[in-house]
Amino acid sequence: MMSVEGETLENYYPGLADIAARQCLVYYAAISASVGEIALVEVESADDVQAVKDIFQARIDYQVGDETNPGGAWYPASIEGWKNNSRIVSNGNYVMLVAADGADDIVSAFNALFA
Image (cartoon, rainbow, N blue to C red; front, side, top):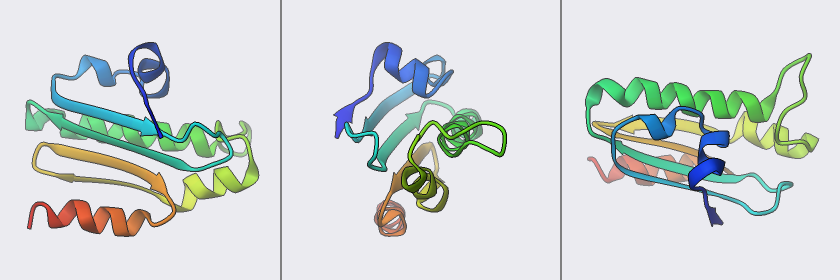
């Protein structure tokens, strides 16, 4: 997986760089046919948690597409992967998006950090 930063981060997650964050790590699979993306953000203010979730949901929506616009994930299998294997979760000021096979296991591991 490759780190997403700078202009690419703004293109993939518009508005995320404008949110005050203590930590922001985004990684994606370098192969477009492969569904593999994880974004972890610790916001400074709990008031920003929903804004990050909305940005993450916009990323999923873009990748999946709709009846009139093809998904940004391009390939039918990739679009299905984004549709079925994407999760957004938060605990306190921490927000995570994961799009990958085994997303539920990753969510469980993330949630266990806060148990």
